[in-house]
Image (cartoon, rainbow, N blue to C red; front, side):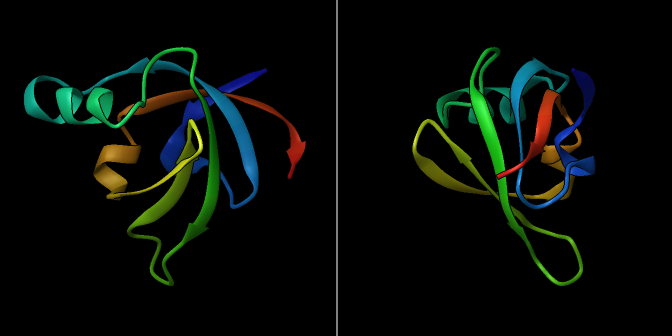
Length: 81
């Protein structure tokens, strides 16, 4: 598996959250939304200019800013869904 930030993943790619790089309020917000180590995450779509990005975590759709997505390290699984 290849570890990249969520911001670098393409639409349709799936992976497992490896680590959160954020601190303070941003990290707490991500954890509250279910973005925790070991969670499966899929990139559903990106806005035309790339910000925000829609992801699916634990069956819920979330919209994240690219600066938030850049704080999430993901072990990318092979292939797109």
